[in-house]
Image 1 (cartoon, rainbow, N blue to C red):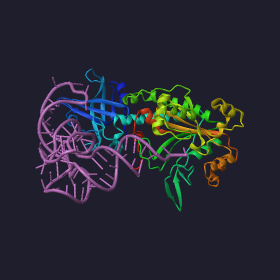
Image 2: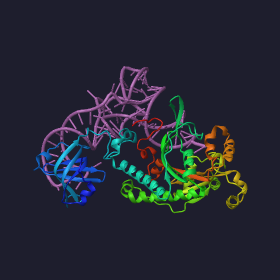
Image 3: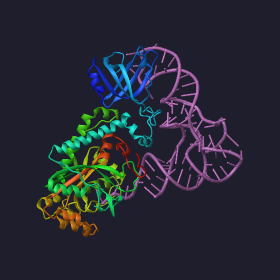
Image 4: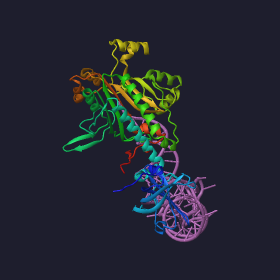
Length: 445
RNA sequence: GCCCUGGUAGUAUAGUCAGGCCCAGUAUGCUCGGCUGUCACCCGAGCGAUCCCGGGUUCGAAUCCCGGCCAGGGCGCCA
């Protein structure tokens, strides 16, 4: 339909007659010359119109009008960009209503709420555009890295029949004559896939019906998950740090321009990331005078303080109290020689194995961007842990049953897409990092 | 769910504490006109606001009080 050339290619093919297609960013009309800044996904270029072409010179053009311009790129020592485009003809494909409801030129950036109401236009604002290009680079890097390392992508269901894990509130939806729920996690499904396909990953939305009202929470987020067999927590922590570093490197390389626009200097964390046990971190906080006891979760303030103590770098917090993590987190086995040795070396106390589980969080720039565990693959132990959590194992038959027919030891983690985008782009509100955020009040657009 | 702050042209803001000088100022946008190859062009004129909604106090409310809705931030909740 359109034989068009992208602007960045036009700049490289000076002299040839070609057609550009895009949006009018702005016009600068003088008496004897007119300039039109044309924009497409590859950048922008100044289109020049001389008065001898009367039809073009008087053509009515407004911001965000969609046009095609036929002409040729020429080198220019007057144009700041060095290259401009001499127009022979312009076709207006679609006019834009005026004035625009948000300031996409960012002279005076509109409020987030206003921009979200007109997200389709806000995407054209350079900084918003940059955020999602960076997010896309992270996503692509995640997918490519794992695909390239033998992981199979799978798709979990989003509608589930029962609350899979307890804890967070689920959204319930009518499902014919039954009640169903929006999945809060692909947890069970990735485990079921891993115990057959060995190494799997997924990028999937999840829903939490919590009435949270904070700059770091949404009711609908996207998770990047992996699960793999014959692995423990340390195995997948290794995968996580390598995946994360790859993602950051790719973002740094592929979206250097966008990061620069946002004023971001991306420091790639060094491998391997530091490992700190939960027990150590409690000690560190207590040494700073924080009133926190072993077994407590960190408050926001304590999480920030801990980051200051450890440094901005990415690090792992591992060996969490069993009470703090899900029932499926694998406890240490003191009878096992390797585990006993680890516990002895780390805690000088093998009995710690009764208190902590093989679960970890990954903190990066002070935000918890990922968490994972080694899972329990023995149905009997699972039932025991469910009882330990004060739950009834009979209600989890569908879960424990999945591991009755030869489930290898396995482990996995998940990264929050919006959270990591926040960290990388330096945004302080997660809504900036979600194209169409769903929060306590927002359901549109 | 709690606490703090806010809601004024399309957008972003001033004015609110100390009610009347505000039928609401500024910037940008938009419309029109002018104009040295401009580049956030410039210059001039104009357009555009039931001052979030409802109630109250008062001679008089954008301004004070009450309720509601919404937004931003802090916290809580978030296996």
